[in-house]
Length: 224
Image (cartoon, rainbow, N blue to C red; front, side, top):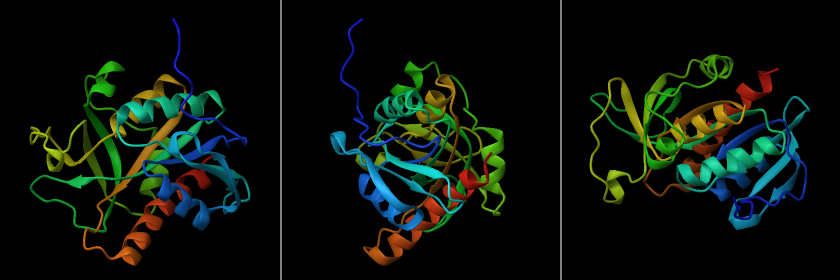
């Protein structure tokens, strides 16, 4: 079987642990705030990635995945091939359900339900659970948990409002596929999501985003 070219073109080594984000601009922002002397490890397809020393002095990679499950799956596989063995998704989500989270709040993903094509292509049938040790570390700071339903098209983009499985409090575009791909490629993975402010206040958005990244970094920094 022939293959397409790799999504990533790694010009510097990646670390055994990584924070993965959708937006390349967020990857840059987190690299500047969390890493010492970050070096760009990838700029192919606009999927910026950086590797540098984390707070514990050991290397940490921050890599963007693009939008959606299909892109995330390809990036996870290539990071796994390059030696990544632990990762935490630091992402955004849409709050749903009878008691939705409010803008600016963080939630640790307790499980993700496959509702997207990439997850189904990977055989996803029921809730996908993160690595238990990373989940425990993410919860150590007291951040509440949430169940996520991953979909291809959010309602805001014209998708139909999905029927929510029990205990689901958020929608996103890629957590289920990312966790399934990580399991397939022998990577321990978990996720933390937050609910963005939409008021145009860039300083507040930056503070919010750094908090999401810091939560992911803390879980990986404590990981053995």
